[in-house]
Length: 336
Image (cartoon, rainbow, N blue to C red):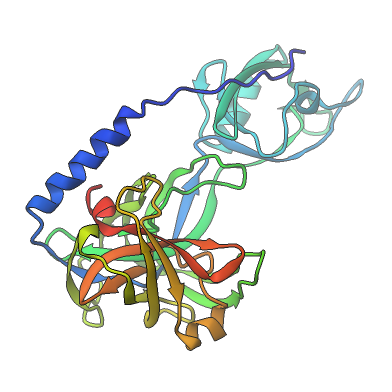
């Protein structure tokens, strides 16, 4: 069998430059008002293929076989096509293996953003009579994050403030369009050297809206007009040029379903950063530090408000200091 040989795909940096110009045009006419988010949302995402979470043997009539392992497949790889036919679900992969009739097939595999092709020979399992390649797979991932804003006119919302990737840095797409309200039932506190996380429970009878897009600046879609916005504050948004070093607040949910306001300091503003790191913030609110240790996973998207204006969203935490983290300028999210 041929081993996998990975190659880097080229990207057009010019797209980033065009994106920056688009944001300037948005702010030339920005007059809309926004509901401040802070509520925790649950969503289902897809690796745009079937992700390998384990390797196994296939027990055939003539003994044990390890087709995937022999072909160089690794845990964390994502199978995106079989014989150039797109694979999105476990059912797609099983159907493709059955069509092979035991003849070699070509797998297209993604690993850490790189793509490769390899040939593999499906083996007929003795017990089930099905053709298998010796992998344990999944096609969806559940995640939670924080809603940043909802446009009062259009009900368009933005959340997260960054791209969504699996543990192997593969970008994820939308598996199910519904976005659910999520109740936070526990917190793993952040400590130096290890990020904490919110533990949430999907409220499947409480859909917040529909997701339509995931990109480098977050998750976007349309909020349900029937949602009760009476507890949400209404604000205007402001560009990065209006942000200053000093006091601000974030809105996050770290217990149950109700967002709370927490005090922070903005310690750095970088208008030119293109990696969603336009702010460095420090949590100063003793309540949040006591409950979470600072910024934890699941708080991504928490809106940042300064001087009564929505200016950004929390995106990342500093591993060496969970009270500090990065934020994205809201103009980048609204521009999407």
